[in-house]
Length: 513
Image (cartoon, rainbow, N blue to C red):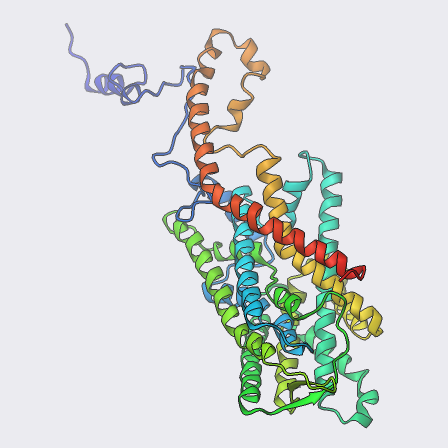
């Protein structure tokens, strides 16, 4: 017998058809086999509702990074994400706590503050988990996925996206109008009474020009927006120090009751309004934008949870003295109430807090791009119209201003507390659960015409379906078990609280209480 050449021996050992081939030992078939190749990960896929895990798969990293690159907010480090998570708490809602004309119970105020800040952090985490579960990186995409049926329906999806963007833009315009109005009123406290009517038209124009200069950037990652947001938070802390010093030294004055801010406004609603937030979904994605290495992705969820909890806790700590001061307010017999003496520093820091917070709201608002016009103008024309509309609304009649405040309060509370609960319920109770390990192609293999005409070679392809389906059912039950805590929080706390708030708002609007 002639000896076998070494090359022949290596080819026969490395051949897929050889019984000693490594592929055949592993149970994988060669190119001529009709068996399906299914790759199961060594570790079980995790769920976004697991507090100590991450469910992102490495094979989706490329698509996720491409989507992240198209976001209006690029990568931000943890400090900037913490700044944008904290700054919405330290704005108009917190400033309104000391503007009330009636004293409140200290315990009721503290319970309202703790409960509202905790629910705000809870709802922020709901948005974060929904974004990871659906792999959507904007609020519009999450809402379309939840409330718009069907795929590939361009006209319906386009209409839904336009409606969502318009609703967000309306809320931002109303919010900026409230910021402008309160800033103008604070500046007027520094102007002599005989000159206030003359200075009133010029102050909004100057503030609008100031805001437009800081809002030229296209993203909140720009340095002007970052500096403005930082100075806004610092100004709030300075304002809080001045207010605390005024209460500690007793430098308060008695004035008659302030003008009504709206039907729905009181100290408790001001506390709730202070805990309303925005930009949760883009901020959570921007925090994960630079995590390219798969092992580092495990720390993404923990970092956002930590930043979310710390920002809510710090904001609650910075609003706590205001609730105490509101509980110590004394009303005299003649109907006058003790409030902080305006002085000079209080209106200055209050104006800085609100006016420097406007650029981040304007820049983060969804706006259409007019590239053929922007090349001839230093500012986006749509952004100019946005700011102009807010300025015009800020100088509206008092009755219109009260309606604007009430509508802003309803939109802010609905978007922060009610909308994430309804989105979570719709996705997890009225939509099919997303597959974990079951390939999408295997779901349609039985209905494929190729499977019916390919002959005996296609008989072995569905043989792996029971195994995958059993694995899928196990992981779906595991995901449901981890989600029970969040479902209980939504059904037992968030939904009843939102229902009571809606009933109270309706009754208050029709004058029942």
